[in-house]
Length: 370
Figure: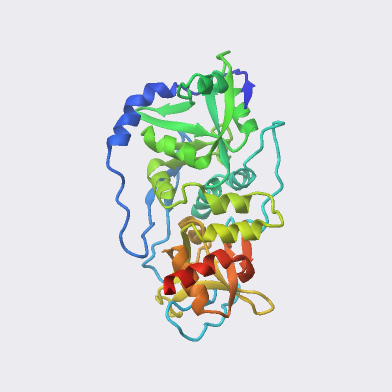
């Protein structure tokens, strides 16, 4: 963590303890109902905006799963059927990422940036597209976020006090602040004149989102001092993103970290204990009903699996996300021996996990048959 000084006051920094009543009310409230159908609907339509007091930005509306899907990749049939031929490459301008994670950087020495999130934010501009906003949200769902804490965060943690986090208020609405890097915290702090020290402290993204939800905030502002490169996400989208995610973001964390010799094996082991999602074509566009797969130039076939439904939405193919348990993944791989493995999060960062690293998954099929 690091301490920063201020120059010009613009943000209302409110101790988190002042929102304890709101947090208690949120805890007592019933949780949002999760769709019971096998293919969850994730089409949320709410306003995302550039910042408090600014004009509303484009509406964040995830694709309607009932609309026909455009041309897509080959499919692995849900029921045995001849494999579909691969479709030609699609032309799109979506904020996808490279397969390998970017190199780690420290804009403030000793404090690692969330490079994927920072890069997605840098692509925003006036009139940011729906795809760009979805790209920011999906890249936010791994690694860490920085929080602004009024005073010394280490002292507050040591004394067992709630962190005095920075909040921006717009009338009756309150938005928690979070940042992609420590330098983004510094830029925010330097807009103020209050001499009281501010601390930047890194927190896992799931912990931050849980705090936003429990504190009954109206949403989350990312990099508030970054002009058009800031993003604001309403609480409705954050709640849905959180309830559909793995609590530990196990797979996302592995894909976002520097690759090691055993990364594929670690992802394979995680697939044996973590629910993932597959992209399903329901036949509405005339293509065979099935699960998306990818093929290499050498003709190898890989089932596409995803760590979160937003990873499927980011591809822009109109596919429906369907949850896939480790046992179901094992069954598909066992029944379709021609599949060489899985491709995880093809929108990037991604990784191919071949069968020899999926032994922890495949053994689940043996247990089911027994």
